[in-house]
Length: 435
Image (cartoon, rainbow, N blue to C red; front, side):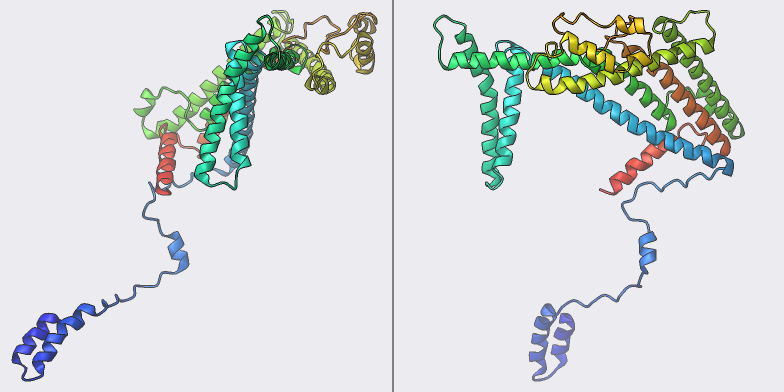
């Protein structure tokens, strides 16, 4: 437009030249021309259109035969159950291990290294959280700085406490150092009593204590994880020969492979159960399979009975132990005998067997730990039942292989061994595209 005005100004006469000079200024300040409107896209088409940052296209869901739909639904529900179960087991294991470590540290005197470390950590956490949540109205930078100061102060309190306790052991000590020494003895004794109750006089005692429980839960995690890996097709398998088979032979080969793996797992499950039935439940090696199962079921029923009774004792012990009473000095011998009479042992065992777990009434105190009228040692008793994780886990994996075989046969699953990894890559691409 500006060049056109200049050229026009050369040929115009009089005022034409002034108009030609003003033309470039108008051109520079004029707004750009609007682009023509594009086609109107309906909302349904816009929602269905692929987004520019989406990853790989989604694989269409396999549509299998109608007879396989109940199998697929059962497999989905079983996966839902196992995923919740493994979450519960993981949280329980973390709680058991953390409780074991902290109780060991807090039951030590501040004069010991473990006692200093754990008291410093606890003081830092308490002061830091108290400062952070107590000064919410403060400016953020000052709040952060004050919280860091509180954490540092908490870390310094435990070493100072230790020096006071060591000074209290010297002749002529008095005043604050003696008070701190008594506080250290009381706190260590309190947590030692709590740890002793959990280890020697509670339901955890039947499981082998906190460490025994953590060990058994680790096995549960491993086998439940193996079952879930099998469900998603990410189990360990050797497929060198399978990849060279013609496509029409891949499905029959995969089904035979799944059935063979299920058979191996089922034989392994029975082998573990047979060993537990003989070594833990007292069955003979030459007993019939039905007799071993019946004997194990009877023993497990007794163990559940003991567990229910021990839980009742724990509810009576807990307030006393948390209140500072020694766990082994609140139940007298006569109170134990009364509890045995009211606990329902007579309905499960012979009178002479029940009489064997009573104690003389003037025998002082009795540890609130359930006893077996049959003479079985109840400490670690549930370890045998928890050991059934091996046959249970292998049975669950065998069930997974059978379900995969049926779903592959019905067309609900692909026989391609790389399909599980492709789905994982699709999910990762989709996640990156949504960021």
